[in-house]
Length: 380
Image (cartoon, rainbow, N blue to C red):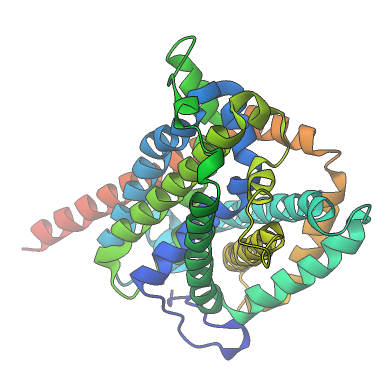
């Protein structure tokens, strides 16, 4: 089976991204959706030490899954996603993996749309109907997916730089409100409270198993592991930073009560008398990041589902994927239900797939290599 690399949308060429672009893209995929909704959960369960939870989640989730994924890609440097899946698992199981990847990424895209629907009325458009936010956003995200993952990888670099700018401005202008002692103690009940606080973020980080379709596009396969690990590590550090800033300014009790603590934090930032709405700037950056994240997951969903269905041109799937994402978004009753779903269902599912799929691919690779070695020995 020929390699099924797909370039920018309709061009049909071979898509390639550098390991630096993969790093920025992985950071954006891990960080963007989490930065607004996750700090409240971290403070609710971890209290003053909740800001440490992303580091624990990275260590037990993102790090092992990224290393397993990188090992799979490195052992088969000349194979694309479809070729790799069929080579290791056979045609039927390979297509089943493609379908699983497509459905998983489509669900993430739908959850991203729901996040945008929840945040946008709070930030700039109060009392806006769900469809009025969801439909334009899905159209932009589908267009981004059609433009190709290379475009999203380049745009993710902007998200990295803009996030750093927000951190610098926040620290520089909120110095008088920051009380570092609010970060202590690390745990006031028992050490397991940090595990409870990190549970949701463990599931978020475990989603990186679905980045296999991105990893196979990197021009230097030996750098894939470094890009995956560093991108996730940078996202964990930034989540720790924003959560710590919110706790030092508001205290963990108040952060736990906020729906979007980081948005409330940025609202406190003023620069002289000419910049008093940095929250709008923050929302704009976040929205661009969500476009990148949602578009990338649409692209991954089309790549996996297109392979499973035997399509030569996956772009035909984008309208259907956008429509399904809209339907799933409307079926989510509330943000509180979404938090509960993330904790009780999504995290166990994501962790199981995150460790299971790369593990199965590695075992299949070892079996395949052993069979080839035995055949060479018999032939000699």
